[in-house]
Image (cartoon, rainbow, N blue to C red; front, top):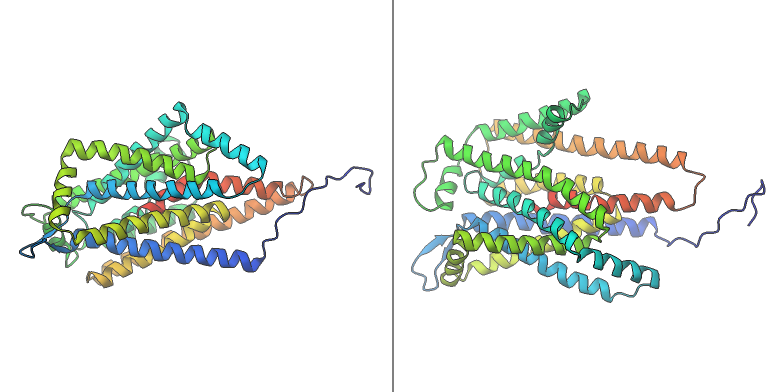
Amino acid sequence: MIGSHGERAISMPPRPVRTVLRRSVEFSLCAVGIYATYLGYGVLHERLYWRLYRTRDGAAYDRFRYPLFLVFWQCLCNASVSFFSRKIARSTPHDERLRFNEKRRLYSAGSAASSRFYALVAACHVVAMCCAFGALIYVPYPLQVLAKSSKMIPIMLTGAAMRRKRYTRTEIIRVLLITFGVVQFSRQRHSKESTFRQAAVPGPQSGGGHQRHLGWALLLMSLVMDGIVGPLQEHTRALFDVEAIHFMFAQNSWATFWMTLVLLATGQGVAAWSFLRTHPSVWRDLFGFGLLSAMGQHFVFYVVCHFSALTLAMITTTRKLFSVLLSIVVFAHRLSVGQALGMCCAFAGLLWEAIASLATRNVAGSALSGKCSSSVPGAQEKQASGASCRNTSTSVHVGEEG
């Protein structure tokens, strides 16, 4: 085909027709899936710590006190479900080019070099999860969710201190708003907090200030490790060009391996298995907890790869708000007026951050589209899609916290 100035236009095959209605249905299903899986995941997570489980003979009731085993179980369930998802994806018909790329990625994912990266990412991921799960022994679940949602606070502090990065006034206001909300929420004691701590850990607990400080130290360590895991995940996926589902399987497989060693070293694996044998009723909550975690991860991967990481941030920010509200209702956490104000301020700052990031992305995308309007049709969409999938790891780590 010859253009008006004699140039030969590039003829491209027609792109797949994806109507607005279909995209809306896909987005709605994914959003509902993320809400349903992670809201249920949060309830089961807190109930595993808080509920009294009856022994097999019904003579006594005990609480499940093994956070390291919970991390192992979640990683095992995620790895198992992603393994079968890989099998289903590989059995789906592809054209020859896509099949060749799939084989190349699988070979890259199984190489010794990539295995070292996966092992490192999984190790950091396991440390972050162990700290977050362990913090629930000393702080209530709503506070853990709220604190884990404030990842931009250590990110900005690190950027300002180490890289001399300058932030705008609105960015500083948003972080101050989140910080005020988290501090205000944690400043007063929940009505059930001391009871929860005493029941969640073996032996008598004083409920004193040093217990809360230990919980905050674990949360801070988890946030620091989250900040390390995100860039490592992005670098690994960009280096080896691995599909999201294969990355999910590799990371969770290595995480299961590391947690097996941790359970053997600490003896918590034997203790947890003994508890499961004498308290069979806990299995129902464990299976639900692991299944919802794995299903939620799949919804997260799909949203990031087919929409964007910022779209996922909008969903997860509001989802965490509902997780906190659901926890307060289901487990009868009583909040003071100051704590309610702090929760509103923190989530207002988080939602403001997500909306600002989405607006910035739309402006940048419009500028890129105008600058490259003369290039090959569809190239920008393909590049944006690839960028979204490369950012999957960072967003998935947000979703895993529940």
